[in-house]
Length: 345
Ligand code: PEP
Ligand code: MN
Picture (cartoon, rainbow, N blue to C red):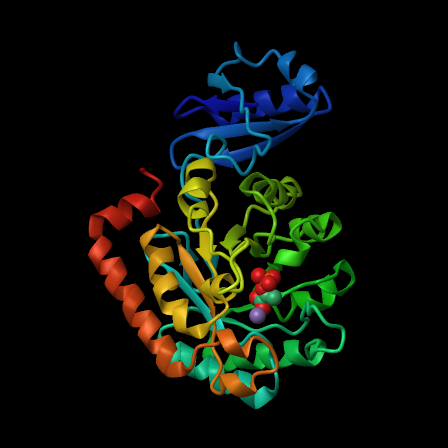
């Protein structure tokens, strides 16, 4: 259930509502917009329905949210969520571009890539230090050593670092090296991990599971939000279908659907979505045209020598082309793009 306060409701009135909710052992989640405050209530439905909220001063209306996700729903937070990461704002009118290798392979490799992608227009650096590989014999990532190289690259370029976390135990150690925790497709329903990143305030890039419905994905986001971390970015990275020419099927339907259902920013990962470098620029363009607020792409100076995902890695030259293409799409969209980015569609 969601309580919409009147414009200009006083903090005393808001506190009165909060106290009424807490006195029944339920949890209020407050979302303060520029003009109105919205309070979400999480708890058993019958208890919520019994709350004497409607008549309290300052309450405009009480709305029941039929979706199973509450804090992630647009009804709870009508404006798009904006997330400040370093000097960059995610979710605004300018799409965010995250670029870097699938895996951090060496200090020189990540420094070189960070410098190049920054010069070509990336806003953040990606690179895996803990890799979820299908084969236990494949390269598993450099672990903490890789995180140290990422932190060096951040120091050198100023680019915030996005990297995958695979287990709860390493979270305190990773915290100092990482600006955005990536939850990989395979861990989208790892609930202890979702709760652990939810207890931090660090932005989380939550990839869609390869067989997850949009609702399951939003429920995974709900786990993070329910722990008190509002900084969730959703990332569509392709789902499993019967098609074999591509690694996955990039589900661009998800972009407008999620933006209708939720206030959270949604990114597209064409690299894992498609799996072949040749098709990635097209699908990056399509993602932005569909209204995605950002992209995450894999870039490697020598894709043929990459220790993971070389076949889907862009060279610097291809990445430059991708950035140029995206700029053209943003310009072409003009005010239509602004309407998409502000959720007015
Ligand atoms: C990755 O980003 O390298 C990765 C493993 O992604 P996903 O979890 O989407 O497969
Ligand atoms: Mn990869």
